[in-house]
Image (cartoon, rainbow, N blue to C red; front, side, top):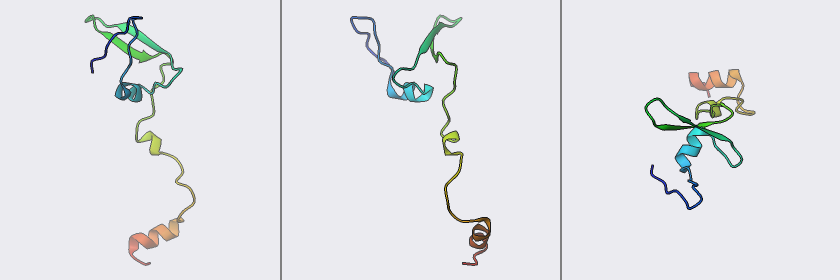
Length: 77
């Protein structure tokens, strides 16, 4: 994803990259030079952003109890 360097030497990270790393305004990032000479961008806090599956974990709220769910799966409704 090419980007342009401004006169001040700044670049804008694309939205897919920010989303992948979980970077939001105020986030700190690090740049590391890899052995092959490439530059790697990482979050400074080393936290990994939640995956799309991790975001789905948790309580679904009030809903059907176990007996109601079992009745639905058995076709007893």
